[in-house]
Image (cartoon, rainbow, N blue to C red):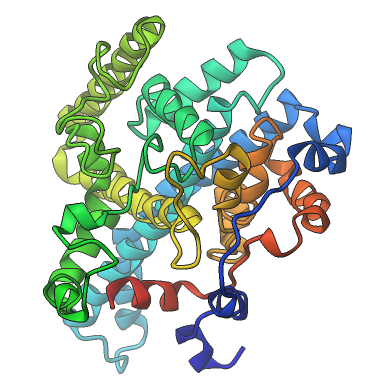
Length: 390
């Protein structure tokens, strides 16, 4: 790949964009199930624990590296005693320290996102054949990154049952003409769209920053900004009686809330002994970067100009699952840290019980059945962000 191609759309996207008119798929789910080798459904608790331990070990190693950043910068400056002619201005020390902290926040953010992805699989009962083990692992993993496990699991399962349904999906719902107060498409003219879609780079960049870094705060404060508009504003993920949940789920929501309270208490103890500065540097900044990566891949899994949302009479489970894009986001980093969540998301929507480590093989198995309805996009992240800001 030449350097300028990082600003171009992938060839797969270009082919979908030129394809006209769009014909809603009618794929047989039975044919897809028949294409999946039975061994891919096997869930190994030991194998899942290996990936969890590996992810947690890397998280600890990143943390240890961060505790040595100040010493590392000081050691570099001590070289001046050995090499008196070595020119190292004080401003360079500040820049080096800032660069190392950004390096830690970004990579630890990937490690935190990996913890969340493993909790996501526990929410689908795909880490272990034993529901209690999945619930325990999911609770521990998600609570560490301040995600209420049962509340998230409930709405996420609804998302899987109603993917890209305008009436029932749970997140990243696209605005409609009514939201923009636009006239009906049969009578609208170009001038009607000018004030709505004209480019405002500064404001668009601000919205991008809010979405990438502050969406976790949106979830925490229950603003419901990205949720389905059928719910009233400020619908809470922490209120057991919320419209988001069934009455039978209320005890589980309380348990999730209790777990989050325990994590916040643990953080409070850490802050009491080490101060806010340490908590922000070592935990909260990676936590924000984690959500930057998470919002990026979750948004792009179902958001694409060529991917439709369906209204009530047109939606089927298969069409919703096919309204998904596999993207090799972050290359090997995405596969290693994010456990195939973005690279094999379409297969995951059809077979959410298949463990993440078997999803690449599942993807290859269903490609011949899906044919042209398999959505893949190799567009580099820089081009995707540029398009999102444009």
